[in-house]
Length: 329
Image (cartoon, rainbow, N blue to C red; front, side, top):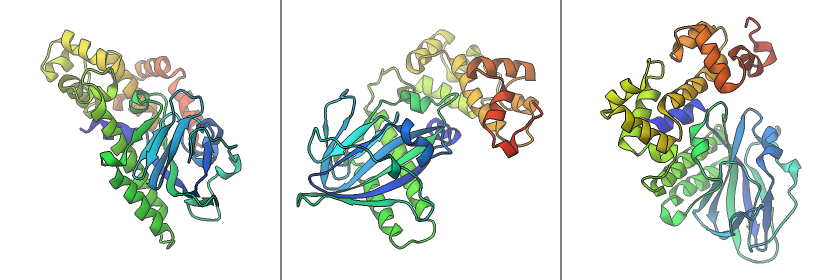
């Protein structure tokens, strides 16, 4: 069981490349916060992650709240903003612009990406692609919770090969070949996984993070077991025995890295699985309860409401299209 892959599949990571940008210095592009554009760019997603990949040239990036100093971007670099913070890309630090919210819409009359060309100052040209990744954030997305506000992967460290894939895929879109948007979306998903793995590799060995816990032999083994067999009636003793350590050692190490006890983590992951099952037509609560490790519908209902805040029937009604809503619960 590959735990990271399991989580990304369950939270429905989906990529989209929106903009193919050619700028000539001086240039500036300011991106509004994700909350202002999410419903237009990826209306089907509960949460969006922003990214930019620099395929040629260079520039600067900074968060608009000035929480980090401006940092330089070079060809091959990728930045990812897991919380979709407002930010700016520019040819010179400190430049600002007013975002045009009208451009942040999925077009119905043409293919993605949208080509943008700006600047006549005669300076250096910079080319980059911009897009979004959609995913579930509730009730539980441990990857999202483990990431910083901004990730900067440098082409000089090897991530440039992914940027080159973006360039090749963008070139293909000019031919309007069928499936080109799907190719770009898959490259975006591949990019995200690669950037996250590189971030994991940079974490200190003892860093308190779910992501660094994946590398710990005992915590990683426990996560693998729970994700591989989520419906099993796990107890701390059973899990520790399978991992090969004492209950106290596993509880301490797991809580240090994941920042919650193993059984609490398991409950929250089961609820994430349950929310996906609740979207299925004709799947009753008793069956869903059994699928995620509960002997009775009543026990599942209590756990779900405690973890998610609403009963499973209410969640189901709120997360199905009106024509598909299950009114039997």
